[in-house]
Image: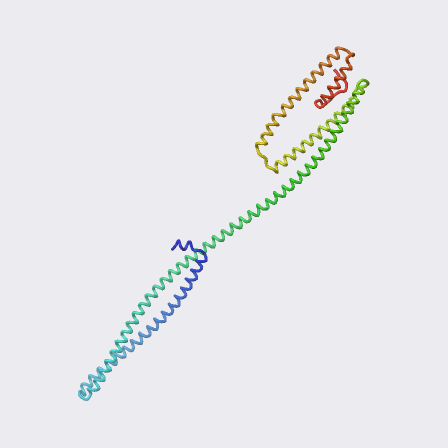
Length: 336
């Protein structure tokens, strides 16, 4: 029974409670009716007892009268005696019937009392079941309240997550806008860099042509060389700025788009192995070229002014080749 009660749904429990209330009301009505019947039976029993007493008194009176009549008038009162005997027999029969009815009423009262006891026990059991059902309903209400509280917390957490997602979407949009701006600026800087490189190449070509034309007459002054150095420095700084902007753009794209760790490791290994090799090659080439230049200069000085023209032409060629690797260059022989 307990398992069935635990497995019952709230709707079935409410129906069971309604049925129990209805049966309890019917039991109350039956109890009141039985009490009324018992009161009526008690009244009937009292009336029957009073009638029985009255009849017994009448029988006693009749017995006395009969005895007196027998003493006074024996013969002429024979007919009256038979009548009295008939009346007495009828009264005895009535008394027997009344006694039988009283016994029947007593048996009925006993049965009704037993039924009342059974009904009272059933009503007590129904009360116990109702109390259990009420406790189960209270526990179900508590569980429903806890479930509602849990649902509210879940809704709040979902709302917070939605707000976080919206915030992240806004930040992603802002980052995409910033990346677009950086790309535009990078493109502009690249265009500016290309323009400056073109200008620098044109100026370098013009300088070379001027040097070739005027190598015999006059060397390039130091002020012009400093200007060329400043222009080359500007080109280098613009190239570095463009590289820095491209690096920032790639970092922003890496923040927005996840990349595989294998690719990052490969790029890091490549940069870590290739860049030192390139630097070493550049240093080696510079050292070899410096040694060659020093050797030619020494031979030119030892030979005299006859080979000065060839030394100057070689120096201009070496300066043009070593221009990307040297920060300062001279149009004429360096001072010793």
